[in-house]
Length: 491
Image (tube, rainbow, N blue to C red; front, side, top):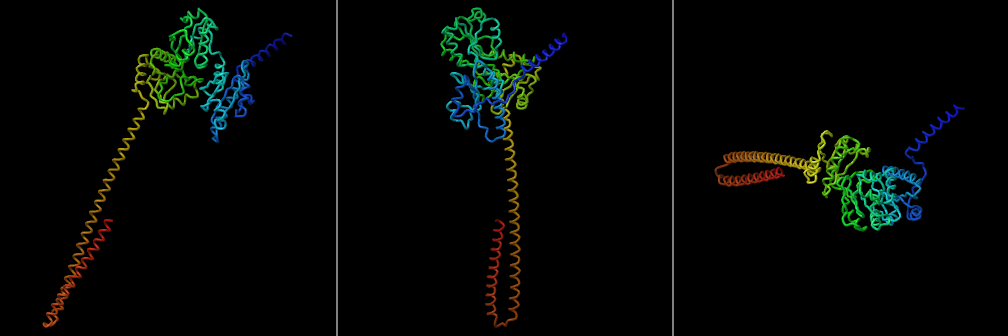
């Protein structure tokens, strides 16, 4: 009997281990279709079924095999999102698709203007998700949306949690109670920025004393900055709080996260100062602390913004970044990157063995902001090289033209010499013919009688005239032929 209980205990322990392991497994898609295809006929009825609706407004994949495969992956991710959210008890959450090509009417009625984006529809607002398209990050963002816009700090443990939040903009206020009109204005302002900016409040005098807050006062914290800015003009209306936050919604040092790539705005064009540092690595942690000091010293510089990326958060992008920027991300890096063409210039830190001091880093950043460090300088060098190549080509063309001209001149000289030789030969032939004719005439004159001398003289004169005419004709013909030859040569 004793051994029976031992065996039961062992079996139960195996069962417990198995149950524990399954409870920690990442959920897998169960094959059930939960994502709705929204169109003009059904979108109203479908969205009425849920308290919160997650809508993916996507480009039409078309006939491209690659685009179709990509859309299938995205659709499976959304199916997993819908499956996980289906188990959420507090809210009924639905997931739907809207095709940018086939369902333009629906997109227009829902005021969706940016395709390939995820939108979360709650009771009275629409929130755009601008992070990584992955099931876990989308679900995490939706949970943040479902939380209250204002988190209450009641004790020292919660205060410690508040102080540990470094990477986000956060506000904290001290109010008399939930029913205070000043707290209500604070809560209304929080809804305008939820969940991108975190709002905290306390009704505890002890917590307020630890935060050095006065009644109805609100402090504004920039990311990675220990000392807050006291919002002036307390007590505040909702409009005054919103205006101050919008005017100061900038970050000297901001964290590039999987859930929110560029929290300040969608305009990512131009040049950016990018810093890579692993917070879990000793060198990375040290460099991050230097960055924080630089940010603290430059809170009033409206032109400075440093994007910090922890490589551990983006393992799939590491090879791409290293290849594109030509850097080694196994140690800290900081550089200026042109978002348009990915040209970049990186600070020399001797493979992490020689981290810069705060002053050295500030000097480097000042050179970057002034344009002394410019990632486009390589483009200018390339343009100069192109100009040099063009000049060399022009010189070669000029040399070729000169050679051609010299050859043409030589040909013309040769043609002229040939023409002169031909003219000399023709003249010699004409002279020989004239001599032969004269000899024949003299022989004929000797054979004739003296009585016919006058006639012969006349005949000789006529013959001479004829010979002269013939010679002239021959000369004219030869000249004409020579002219024709010259024309042919010139042509």
